[in-house]
Length: 79
Ligand SMILES: [Ca+2]
Ligand SMILES: [Ca+2]
Image (cartoon, rainbow, N blue to C red):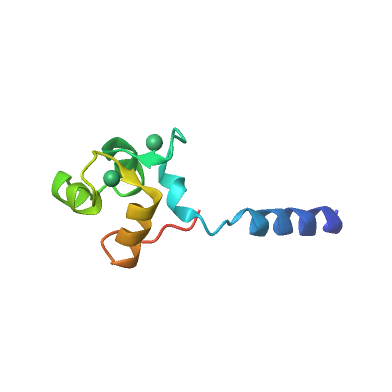
């Protein structure tokens, strides 16, 4: 019983991947849409989204998301 619990804890720890950015990418297409970002960051307005979307292609890439997190525009979400 105890063994199983330890194994579960280790599994959960291993699942905490550093690529936290893509937790916002609900449909897994590699880009975060306005709808997707609002699921994780409900306070993001269209102005904020436009600021995050550095190349203005209408979606936020992993790089753009991480840059926004590092700039403090978005709060870091760990899994
Ligand atoms: Ca997506
Ligand atoms: Ca973009």
